[in-house]
Amino acid sequence: LADRSAGRAWHKSQEPIDSPLYQYIPRELCDSILHIKSHGLSTVGIFRVPGDVKRVAAIRAAFSRGEENCFLSPKCTVHDAATVLKQSIRELPEPLVPFQVYKKLLRATR
Image 1 (cartoon, one colour):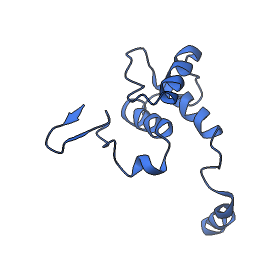
Image 2 (cartoon, helix red, strand yellow; image 1 turned 135 degrees about the vertical axis):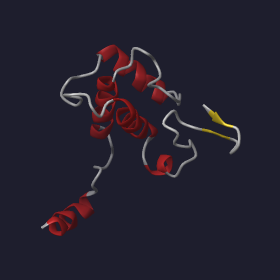
Image 3 (cartoon, helix red, strand yellow; image 1 turned 180 degrees about the horizontal axis):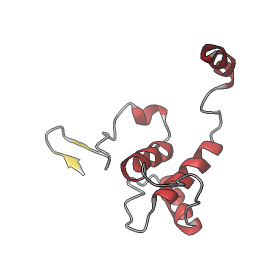
Image 4 (cartoon, helix red, strand yellow; image 1 turned 90 degrees about the horizontal axis):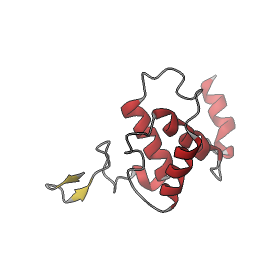
């Protein structure tokens, strides 16, 4: 989708592609989260029911090739997006909460 007034492309969720969000979060994670937010918040068992193995592999391959809008296929389900998200989080080189912050975060919650 294009926003002609601003002269830049927009992600399907209306998040600008050049948003700082994409500077800090891998696109695969960000797009998965945005897809789930837009299409799956009322889906029961979203993280329990696995996505289709072939579709998930195709989506991940598309992200690896640098493609955008990998969730636009009408066959793509929120379960596919949730599976892509879970796999991507497992493969991060560092946890979402870095080790050096983990204990401080635990203390702050007490």
